[in-house]
Amino acid sequence: MKILYGLPSEGMGHATRSKVLIAHLLKQHDVQVVTSDRAFTFLSQHFPGRVHQIDGFHLAYQNAVVSIGKTILMTLKNAPKNLVRNYEKYSGFVKDFNPDLVISDFESFTHLYAKLHRKPLISIDNMQVIHRSQLDITIPAEEKSNYLLAKQIIKAKVSGADHYLITTFFHPPLRKKNTSYIEPILREEIIQAKTSEKNHILVYQTSTSQSDLITQLHALPHEEFIVYGMNKDETHQNVILKKFSEQGFISDFASCKAVIANGGFSFISEAVYLQKPILSVPIQNQFEQFVNASYIQKLGYGRHFNSFTSDAIKAFLYDLKFFKTQLKKYQQKGNVKTYKAIDDLLDAIIN
Image (cartoon, rainbow, N blue to C red; front, top):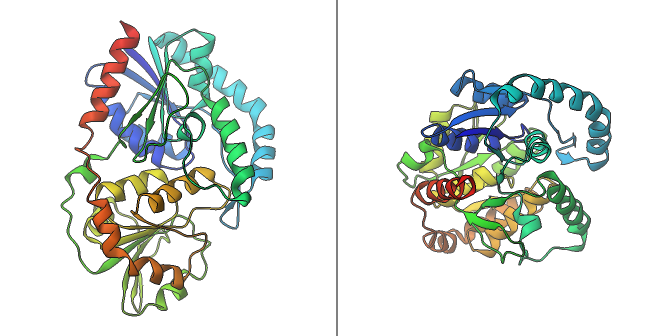
């Protein structure tokens, strides 16, 4: 079967899980991929000749907060030229490839292609839980506008798919047909990681604008923190900054006693799989991160805080034993169930 696979570049979580799924699909199918920016660079290294660059959607940030106004203006400004460039891509390799089926990981070009050419379309992402389920968490007043905006964007992004597979570690009631849950798609390096519990806490800091990070961590001098995301190799008392390397990061991840991060789905789902308690501080105005963090707290896997402070870390660490007990209830055997669900769905749609 020939499959056209699309993913966005916004956040590397889409790229890392897509790498896993594309490698699985290539065992039985011919796959061509469209994406942009960092995801294009990353996937091209692993699948040379199969990855094609298009112009994608981007979020605009201001002081580590998603700027909704700037994002809308940037999208409106770039949309016409992006449409022309992406159409040129279609006129080339996509037209010649003529896929039998399209998979979209929250990506618009492949969605539009499938609708225009009446190709079977499968959505695989974690975002659709916001639109296609009945969230059973408390949504505070200050998040209501973000919720409504996110819901409308997600509804329009990959509308009318033949089926929606939602990757998730939490399962609110579904409210839409042709929708099912699958387990998070995990990197093989995470599946193979040997877990242990040393004394350090892993801090995955994707935003370098947290200017008081080291100061806040210094307020807990009896704890050791290993921080990734600031692109430095430095030691500041009880805080060790490390430049990113996959092998080093996974080693520190698998051996930590807890993690501190924003609310990105891929990292949080890996932490759940490794059974590491999570302190999550979502990036403001990213409702998807708010949802992930809220379910971490609801399930007892960790705590959700709105800001990064030493007091929040102290409160989180106080309940580590409880979080570890709750995490032991989560069971996932690698990607076995996820692969089977995807393979069965592909067979059902084509046959």
